[in-house]
Length: 221
Image (cartoon, rainbow, N blue to C red):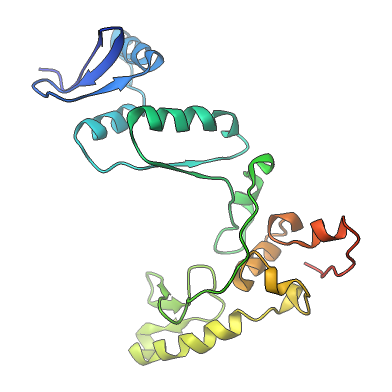
């Protein structure tokens, strides 16, 4: 017996499991892909796994990451998620990798970047923290400059995180003396990641916009 059946039905295309009363509606193009794969004996398209998960009533959520390569397909991907009745999030703004590398920044679609909200504070290091597989604890996954060695210091070392967080949040380095710090859109640890990745200033800082309007208070990044 087949694991899944796909067939036209009342002008639509359905995918269902034999014996099940529920199924998933397929776009015509997806049905054509399945028919071609079955006739050619080739591998089935990767989206089939999502359709099967929906049919099995698994909790599915799609994350659509907009890059310079996939930007033209964003609306189609969102429409597909809505047609499936699956919740989805669209991510346009990326950050440098945790080690300050800028590969992810180069993959962004510049025309789809959204303006970030002003950073108004964070409880990192006070009410939560990040731990890597080696027992090194930091205030969060971004602010790793000063870590607690949990294996060496034990749980008492966690008491230092509050002070570490307060220090890492200070506007130092390329952000020293910035008069726009009160409305900055990223925390200092994240700004440092952008700076180390040599990211374009508009990706994380307001000075580019302010300078275009006659403001001369630009800090070195």
